[in-house]
Length: 439
Image (tube, rainbow, N blue to C red):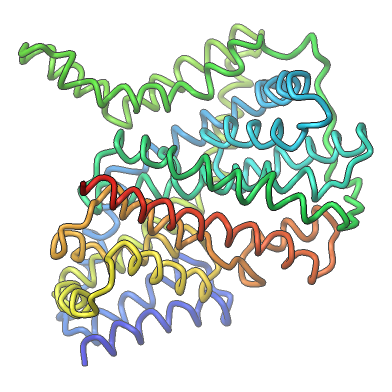
């Protein structure tokens, strides 16, 4: 009966978001409270479950998300994103223009949250499409595929960053494995798939074009590439901590401090404030205004994470997460594939990749312990599932349709298939990595 109540709780969440059009946080709160009652948590303990759920997830993540938003905003507003695109366009030329845009999306997408990256980079696609007389969808899909893989697989993006502590994974290892999964996935869903989209006619609306900054106002090439990649360099470097300390306890403590994701993002923001801000003659007042806007942009993401934390805590406090783990183990299915499938089902029902990933994680978390599944790969498997089958209940679907001014049929043919290819190629590579890492 408890499993039925869990399914009923998730169904209520889906109905409140997809049909009743409730704010996501309110939907999570209502469904979590109903779920808590159904699963036998006493009324007086429900407020504590709500508080613990919010604190357990946001406590380790809120600062990472906020600092990441500030960092990404400055990368875009300073002109670094435009400079990266310009350099890659000159390097690759018209023949390989899709690869240039894919790399632009990948590099810039690391610090930028998906919706922000979409809004800031899509006008760049339109500008290039107009300049070189190329179909916008044909050259745009590779860039958007790159944004998708960074969103689903790579810290410091919200979903993978939240799943790392939930599964007891390692941020550095997850990042390295995420890069191994992300690169072939974006190539398959980007330049290779986009070759089939050349004949899709798109007439982007003038409303969504953005003025291009003059070349002499842009940051230098090294600065533009190095600053966005700094968080990746620092997080990946954290894997060297055990080897750098050479037995010195104080030195090891210092390196562990530097490897913390919050400290990594603080260093990145501080460096960007100087390199892309002050050095570019942008006033501190203007930089701080960028940061304030960035916090507004991602406030809804923080609330979604908080809501998912509440639902996760309901499953934990009721003990039903252990019952689910026992049931799922009994299915004799690869736990990574199972995590991917659950995330995909929630994604199809709810629309939001972040909601799908975090909700699936609350269900699957005990499975990692029960089966001994690789926690780093489980983060990526759920990320892959959360990107599958984007359709009419996903805001990204409609943003793509309206920005590119496409029919519903062409949006499904391009956007939905692209997102699904990222998810399918992602889980395929993850399962292969799982075999290789076991041997």
